[in-house]
Length: 408
Image (cartoon, rainbow, N blue to C red; front, side, top):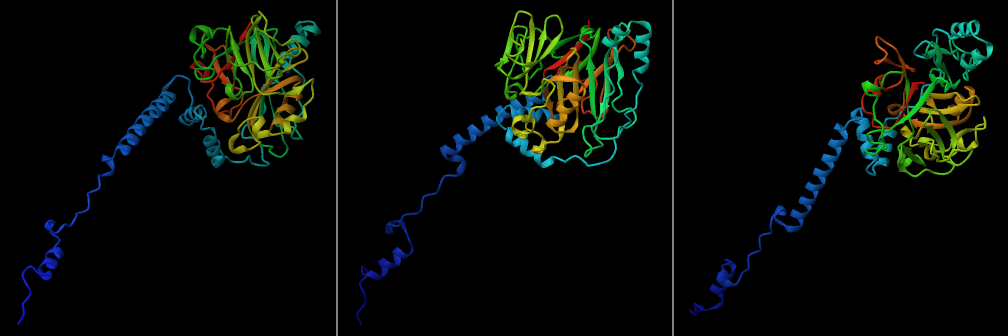
């Protein structure tokens, strides 16, 4: 019988089948782990650096002086780092439309200023009473007035003469449970100061403090919020020779003069321009009351022209400021307001030129101050009991700029 040769194909095939290296087989290379790859190491390093920088930036925003809740500070940080659309989307998710109908959650009745007006008239000439007495009672924009609605009361006095009057007024018969606070400030007895914020306008040679320090509280009568963040206000900010942003011609403007009085109007019009007498300038959007009339522009592009509101809703907390024909300064703020209603409230209080200030509840407030136990440490009180900010908010550094009002 013929047997295959030992060197024949049988054994050779068997050896190749066993895959020995001597048979020429190549084992697959072992892939490097992901963390050992160069591009992965570079990406991880860059990500770590990015997270460290972001973490430091957010931590700084949460701990720097200026007050505000964690959500407020995070929102401010995000808007300042090109994440405004993310913040707006989050606000849209949490936005709740105002409730229709109903009555206010607090009484609008308060001690009337009528008694003070009578004392003025009895003790002084009618002209004196006209200069320092309360404005005329306001008519409710919601229909039949509630008890005390539109009736002025004395908030602050200077040497016994009423200097600031306040009242409550509803702006809508639809959202009838929401109340706006209105303050009327007499420039003959008061002087106004623009103050910077720790974040807006931020550090600079402002020659003014972002808080009402203990040694500057004597004679303090009121404080109230300013406008939008300067980079989205459509204008600029100027204080004691330093500036942020650019003063824009035609922008709605509050001008603070060195003698303490203010003027309100469109920059570059009616004598509102930079002079040696100007101490501060704050611009915000366009006027919403012009020559005692409300322009049609208040109804146009509400969410883009008048602020990135909570959820894009028209009806949100808004504040505004204006000036009457006889020079009184009017401040208005409240919830569930659209721009036209804010303008209507200003106009109802006698404003001939007015502008919107800030919006959304976190940023606005009006405080008046009573002498308390010592004139150097007056007690702050909120005009609206429903405002979010505490009455002593400006006794600590404020993140946004604001106005402080003192006795002359």
